[in-house]
Length: 92
Image 1: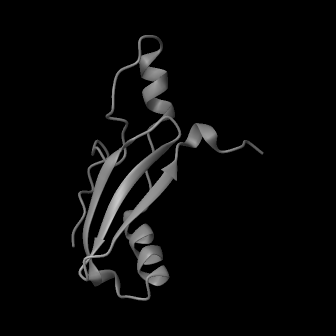
Image 2: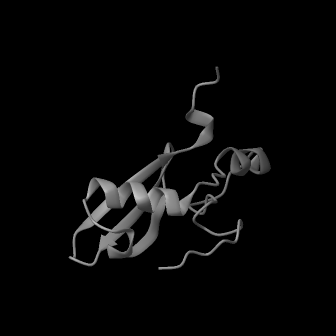
């Protein structure tokens, strides 16, 4: 399975709507670049399978707190992974 490396990809950016005020800031707050191969390895480890057993990885959508992804294994099992937006991570 290969993943699009484009940082403008919908995987990394908010695509569920528009903001009436401060749209540039709100979109930047919800931009989240993450390590897709690393996430795939974590999923494979938790499911006790090889990363190659992951047949599908797609974005379900954006919520107010998380970005959600649907992961499909070759066995047909489907999982949902949620990644919180950076604006929700406490600052130290």
